[in-house]
Image (cartoon, rainbow, N blue to C red; front, side):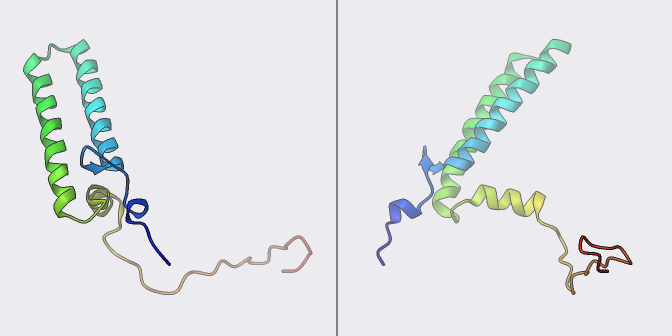
Length: 109
C-alpha cells in the first residue's frame, strides 16, 4: 500500500508543529493578560513587556531548531513526560469489584 508523507506529517506553520505553535501563542497571550491585570494593581515598567516579547521570539526560534533536530511533537512529549505521566508504574493484577450481597436487576447476587 502506498503512503503519502505529506499526509502522515503533522501540520506545520513557521517551521514548527501547529500544536506547539498553539501552545506558544497561548503562553504569550496568557502572559500579556497576566501583566495587564497586574498593571491595574501595580505599575509595571514597559521593559517587562519587551522582555515578554523577546522571550516569545526566543522560544519560537528555539522550537524551530528543536523541531528540525528532535523527534516530531517534541514539546508535547516533553510536557507530557514532565507534568502528566506518573513517576511510578503499579504492576500487579487489577482489583475486581465485588457486589457484597447487592442484587442486580434480574435478582441475582
